[in-house]
Every structure is written in structure tokens, then in C-alpha cells.
Length: 212
Image (cartoon, rainbow, N blue to C red):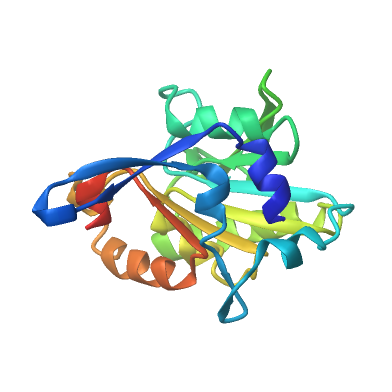
């Protein structure tokens, strides 16, 4: 997976910080270098071994987001619109609740090629039943995918309860914001984020303060 990911995101720059002599300094890091930080099977993978991996199987890139695709055009939209040129790319939003709705995953395809899925659930669902229904819809979606490699890209730890049983080939946490500081944030968010950090192969942050 890694060599192809580097090709898709080539040219993307991630900015990292170093602190020589107590002074902050921004350093550009190419995407290929970021991806090379990933550890596999408890050890650091080398580029040569990963280039030997077969890339013939289809790769499914799945984003689990607290943001609506059409809310604001920002980092998720930039990255996933570009990724859709090479991957089967799916962006799954938080659920919508409708009176008398039959649970379903409502799909639409964006001009960029990104497939946007919205779980539609009946109004009045409890938190526990919401998790059960989301997991059912998520599992049904994955069963219909061709066999191959799967990358899960999280924008919210709140997606973990219905997806933690999955063992993707790559788990990515893109921590754009301090979600626990938002008004109305779930009290479970901090614990779920801790668990997501433990699972993630790669973590991106939205800035130096989040990194620290």
C-alpha cells in the first residue's frame, strides 16, 4: 500500500516543527517521508521490502468523518478528491436521523469520484442502538467491497465504537481539531481518542499545539 499512497499524494507537503536551542522552526516534510514513518509488525519497514508488495489488489480508502462533505471545502476534501483518482474512495459522514426511516447507507458520487455515504437512521435512536445500526451498515458496505487492502482514515474518534472490530491494512488518524474542547463534545471522546492513538499507524495533526 505505501508506495502507491506516496504516488497519489506526491507533492503534498506536511509541515513539521523542530525546536533547536529553544526556537521553533518549521520544516517541510514530503508525503513520502511521512508515510515512511509507519511501523509494521513491531519494526520499522524499509522501502525496498514494501515496494515488493503486490499492488494488483484493489485498494479501498475509507474516511470516517464528523464533517459533512458539503459543509466546507477543507483538508478532507482536498486529500480525498485527489486520492479518488487512484483509489476506490469512500467518505462516510455522521448519521442523519429521519422520522420512520429504515436504516440505510445513502450514497452519492461526487464529480471528483469520491463516494459519499450518509447513514440514515430512525429518529429517536438511543446512543447504543445508533452504534449497533452504524456497525451493521458499515459491515454491509465492507462485505460488498472486492477483496483487497483497506485503509481507514479517521477524522473523529467517535467513529471507533462501530469500526473498532475491523483490522485495516492501514489505520490513519488525522487530528484536525481539539474536538473534546468543542461545545457539546461527548464525554467519551477523550477515552476513544486515546484508544485511536494506540491503533493508528500514522497520526497527522492540525498544528503544533495539537502535536504537543
